[in-house]
Image 1: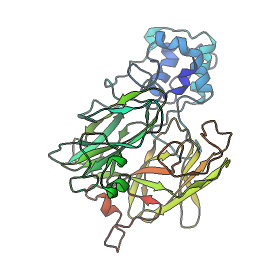
Image 2: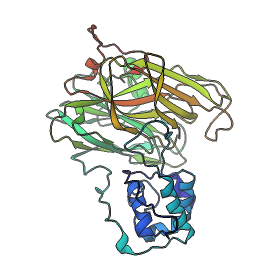
Image 3: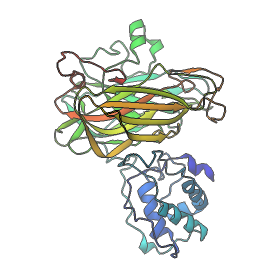
Image 4: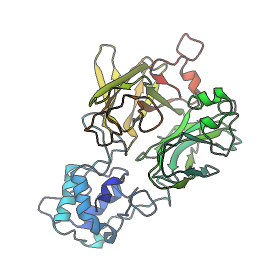
Length: 442
C-alpha cells in the first residue's frame, strides 16, 4: 500500500478552494477529492506515467484511500520541498491544510463515491506527455545497455537535429526510456561551430574513457554550450513564459549526457525529448547558468556540513527558475541575493530530497541588474543518521557517482533574444567573456 508515497504527484495548482468544504460536510470523491487529484496528482498518476497506479477514476482511487491520506498528512505527497516562508512558485503542487483535511475526512468516512454529476470535467492530456503534443520528438538513436550491478560511467549520445533554420523552443520534456535507472541527465545544444566532442561518434553511445584523444577525455564534462534541458527524478517539463524560449541554431546537435545508476536489474534506455516550438520569434532568450563549488570536502560523520559559492551577474537578466542538485548526502539547499548593504534575501530554501529533484519556477520572473550578487549554500549530512549515506566514515569530495557529491545550483535566466551566452558573460568595458567565480556557463 505504501508504494504510493514513492512516486510524484505533480500538476498545475488549482484554485485554493478546490477540494475544500466545511468541516461538517461529508466529502465525496467526485465533488471534493477528484478536483484535488486533477490539479495535483494526475500528471503522474495516470496510465502510462511514472507513478505505480492511476488516480483518475473512483474505482482506481478508492483502494488507495488510506495510503493517500497517510502520504498527504506526512507531506510526502505531492512532492514539494520548498520552505513556504521564502518565495512563491508557479509550479507549487503542495496541498493546503484544508485539502489535506478533505482527503483525511474522506478516508475516515470510508471513501464514498458520491454523485458522479458533481465531478469536474476530465483533464485533457497529450498522450504520453505533460506538455502539448510535441512538434518534434528526438530520441537517442541507439539504446544503452545498463548492467544490473556496479557503477556506470557517464554515457553520451550525440543526436543531430538536422535543423535547416534556427529554432526557438518554447517547451521541452524529457522522457527516460528506463526511469528507474536515470539518476539525472543533461541535454546540451552543440552549435555547428563548436569543437566540443567533434571526434566522438554521432548516434552511438560512448563514454569519456572510450575517446582516443586525451584532451577530449578531459573535456567531456566541460563545455560552454547552453543547456536545453536538465532532468532528475521528479523534475517537470520546461514551459517558458510567452515571449521567452531556448535557442537552437540551425545545424546544431543535441548532446545527451546520461548518468545511470544500477539497481540489481539489467535494462536498456533509449531516452527521448519532446519539443514545442515558439510560434513567433521571442523577445528574450532563456539560458541556463550554474553556481558550482567543485572544491567541497565533507568530513566523515559531519551531520550539517556547509558549502557555499557566490558570484555576480555580468549583465542584466530576468531570473525564471531554480534547480538545486546534490547527491545522497544532500540535506538543504538555499539560493540568496546578497545586497550591497550586506543584507540577505532568500530566494529559495529546500529541504533536499535526493529522489525528488525539482525545479522551482518563480511565480513572477525577477529582474536582476548587472552586478547582482547571487549565493548558493548547501548543507550535507555525512553521518550515520543519514539513511541514504553509503559510507559515513568516508571523506567525500566532488565526483560523478552518487557515492561522491555535487553542489550545483542551476538557474534559468532570460536575456535579450539577440544576445548569446558568450556575449552575456562580457562585462561592460571588457572585450572578452568573463566568467565570475562561482557562476559557470557550462
